[in-house]
Amino acid sequence: MAPIPTPPAEPQDSPDGYVGLDAAEAERLARQRGWSTVRSLPPGAIITMEYRAGRLNFEVRDGRVDRAWKG
Image (cartoon, rainbow, N blue to C red; front, side):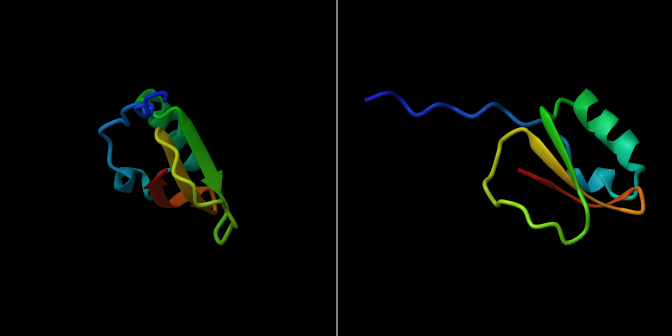
């Protein structure tokens, strides 16, 4: 049986620090800090709930990050 792969390490970065930032600037900063995937979503978007290491999600309202979370 093959070993279970170890997921890549996530950046040591708090999603809360992105709230209130301009969405484009927040995405640029997140990628600079090592997030491999950055996903911007409108408020109330229907999304899958699978957790993906290295992904940062932004809920964007009026061009600003309203909420941010890992996975």
